[in-house]
Image 1 (tube, each protein chain N blue to C red):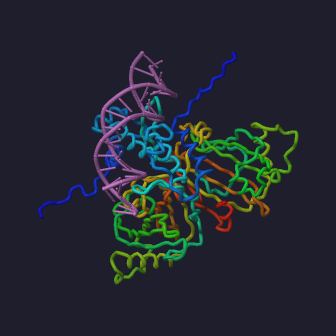
Image 2: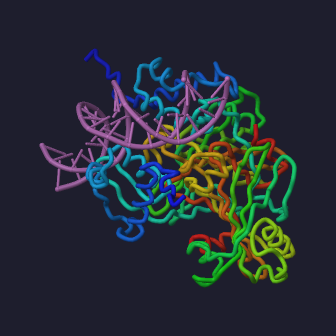
Image 3: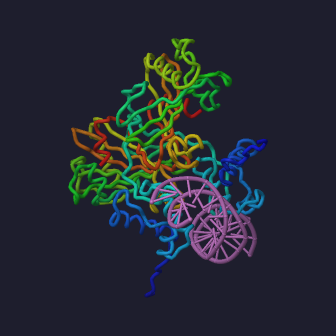
Length: 248
Length: 248
DNA sequence: AAGTGGTCTAGACCACTCA
DNA sequence: GAGTGGTCTAGACCACTTA
């Protein structure tokens, strides 16, 4: 048979479109450059706008593009390497290029999944501290830190009952603890409305959820749930010294 | 003014739909149960099918649902905790519930990003070993392991030049190395066509890409790029002993 | 062959940013 | 107010699984 099957596995249009756009990004566009708008691009490629958007969504998921409503679609910079599994840990606020900033603290009953990790009863109230991680003025992550009262026995009644001052007091007391170790897990999630706001994204945006269990004196001293922007972050574990290598 | 703004922040239909479905999954469905099909669900909620699909896509991203073409939409089991940052490491194939299986090996020029990590020249050929990680008969991850020739000096010329036998030979030699440490990073990606096939997903499915640099004798002995199914996997780092806790 | 999810179209309107 | 991306509709056809 002299015939050959040319299109035995016809790939979807949006998939082909994605590779075409990806190549164009490599060769014809610089970081930060604005792409033509979606209607224009769809017309240029001869597809419906919805199909084009499917390709753009994938590229955004891969961190190649950044889209902002009312503004346009720009070429994204390479993802930032963010140290997550770093044992040299400081609870109190940090400054500089990669900084944690306390937001506030309240006393509340944690979600069931958190209560299970903390091994507290289902209705036990704990401190919930909100923090934000910033880099170069951009928010990277929003964190909720759950701290049982037992972990911060020195917390004085005179400290503010909630708000930023309270958050700082809880973290100060927490830093007195001798940590024995911790376990972490990473999974994909979508940003809740509140997190999305802090992260400057739309609700439902893809995020990497890092759950950390801190152990001290044989107990779970605290549990942190940190929500990182999946489009801009590459989470790194291990020696910070080796990070330049992976940053490539 | 006796009037109050009821819909000052009207949330999108698909977002509201998602929370409604999510609640229904918690209360009315069991793991593995099949949902009504998309046309039926769309009609029931009075929305277009595309809108309903947007909600289902989010739930699938969060690991709540599993959709298979030609079959239907089922309620997904909780995500599997997969140890990734585990220092007690074995290169050779393992068996049992959580197992690595070698697939094949070829000699090739690595992608530029990998060559940079390996610090080899841009045209240096390396061994590329393919492996699959399985759990309970389901594929969890597809890995490409890049090994410079220097890391496996004992590799005999009599070994097969490629294929499964070669893969095993490379891993055997690699296991002779004394590892000094490693760095890892995790980021979101979308499955390439080949990975998608191995992972039993469609191309473009969301994956967690784990890049590991193995250090030995002050050099980079190997680089692994492992692609985990983001819908079914929760990656864990730290003491395996603590994993039951996080599994909750 | 019937039924499922996956792709694609050609429109419309909305929410947001910025000059 | 003009221009952007985000949401939504009501269809159509395709690829795949299962019986």
